[in-house]
Image (cartoon, rainbow, N blue to C red; front, side, top):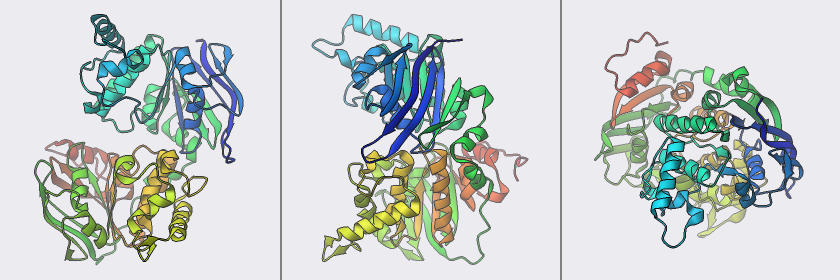
Length: 503
């Protein structure tokens, strides 16, 4: 049996506002192991990571490192001991080179020396991956930045690497590269804590899994003894399974057309796309990365100035401008919520009221009471977990932040909702809530267009699915007449689909 490298014993955390984030949490990470950490948003995962990193102290309990009690009062203490934490928003300096980021603690004077380059090559050999040391990090794709972050941790002497949602926005090929590196390093004696919302990845990569719910450990077991259903049950019960197993009811005949797009084209992005969506209808958009899925939503929202073609709402053509499309009732929930959908430093109430300031103002002056009331309604209706509407959005978990994006449009005059990867980076509990919200929009007579890399997600909520490739719609299916293998084949460009897998 391997020695325990890091251990949390009865760790609790109560914040000054009364929130109990952790309650008697115990966790043991063995040397040379990959330990999975999962739980719904608000379960306490991030708080536990911060305590392990020395960023915040526990209210009660102990952290033990290599068999001895430790008190880390700052992240530098844990790093010096050999613990590195890689957060979801990768902690690299985008304007520096790969080499400068990897050895950022040594930056001084003449930096790019032959001995340092030799050390870098040896590090890459150990990692099993080499990034160009002279590339600017901000120019790298996300997967490569994640590998640079791992290299940085190793260069700092890490023997335990805690990874928070490292694959949240990575393509499959990038995930494969990262997993190969993690396994290689585990064989070299490095331990990992792997926190992810992708339960299939947790089951594939880890040796043991700990599940948190409401700040408590509800399951801790070897991965081999678990499956995805068991993890979901431990986290939130069977609610998500029930949502995914229930297909959308047939659309009522004669439902009026709310959104109609004709011949949408944009150089290098779209090539003559037509789309019609009726009141109460959810249309899924399936496709691989680069197929034109997000570009289609941007064109519908008026965010692509080079786009030609026509977009009409309730039969009325609308100018190709964001302001005109919003006034016509088109709302967009973007994939990159932190950059495009929210102002992280602003409070919940300020974010929620942004699209409706005109209706929430008196003689041009925003009515704070009305803004606060709208935010409180959004918090209650969407189940946003927060101490108050005054909480900055940047302090919320991913799923709760995504609900704030929905809240921006919920109480306005929107008739058409464009949803780009609405559940990316959120846990299964928040995913169930969001999919239920999508169904609620349709039940209220709205038109919904939803883009998702998870084809099973589209099959769960959509009435109809269009498949895109190279900026074109290449196929269209009713959800009751297709399945995930066929959608994958169509999106991948296979010229023949047997149809044997259709429902």
